[in-house]
View 1 (cartoon, rainbow, N blue to C red):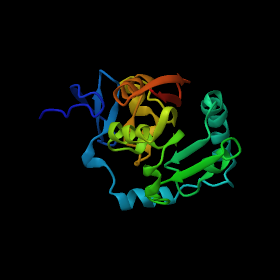
View 2 (view 1 turned 60 degrees about the vertical axis):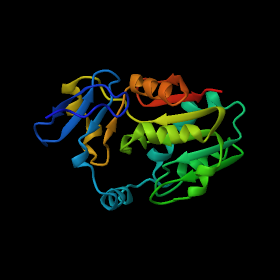
View 3 (view 1 turned 45 degrees about the vertical axis):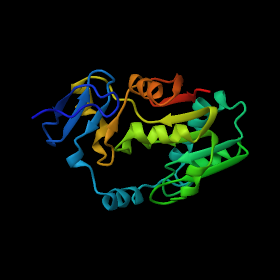
View 4 (view 1 turned 135 degrees about the vertical axis):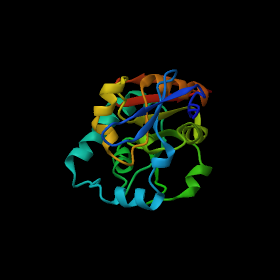
Length: 217
């Protein structure tokens, strides 16, 4: 049975099977993107139910500290000329959007399940953040392209996701794949390929979980 082409770069892929869970992953050797077999992806109502179990609120100090670190490392170094922002995929509570208001004049937030404010896709922003979101995307190239289209010229897309370890043995032991809502996995190289494909350029990353793209003028 032929393997599907890569969702990011259309290259040939191979199948990696987790022996304990029997989950199948589609691996691209070219751009290093890994995705869960589509037949194993949760239905939207089940996915939403899983998100509702998360304690992603201001009362969760670790959650707030994660965003404060993200702001310091991935946003403030690129904040010049940023006066508007959108937090895409904010979850049940717009924690990051609220924290961003301390630094940015105008901030919107959006989540397809909890804050489906479709009007944000008619606006343009200087900054779009997407934190712990792109690992949940079924069609990341298309969805990130849509976000870049909502940026002003030279606007910034700041991303947080854990970069996968880059080899089969470590990937199959990796804690990040245990979450059943995590279906797409990246390296910095994957995001560089995505940036080039959607009209952006990679500005910075920490090789662990942060990546910043800039929209070309």
